[in-house]
Length: 111
Image 1: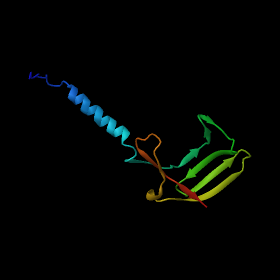
Image 2: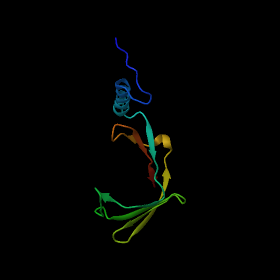
Image 3: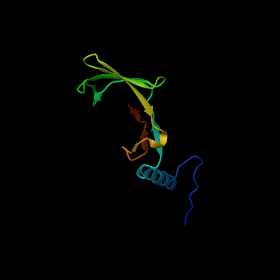
Image 4: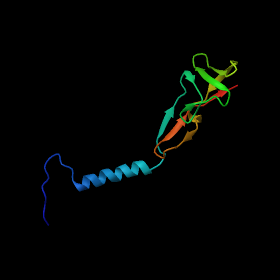
């Protein structure tokens, strides 16, 4: 059997295979790690695809975490102010849209 000496810093076929196998395991392993998405204070507008829409009649939603209220403005300029309570992190629903990591999304329960 012939031995081949490699120069320092070169990558062999074995190294490339190991990297590819590890990459495939990570991608196809599914949703075993979580990432967390919080609802932060600020203004939110309804969208359909990439275009803002007001089909629901909602013009904008303002989340105020300091005062724990949501202000919803409608197309007819009416305003609803609704108090909310944030769920504990363990109660956040999860989903796995890309089969690469689970995403847990915060939920604000409104009265």
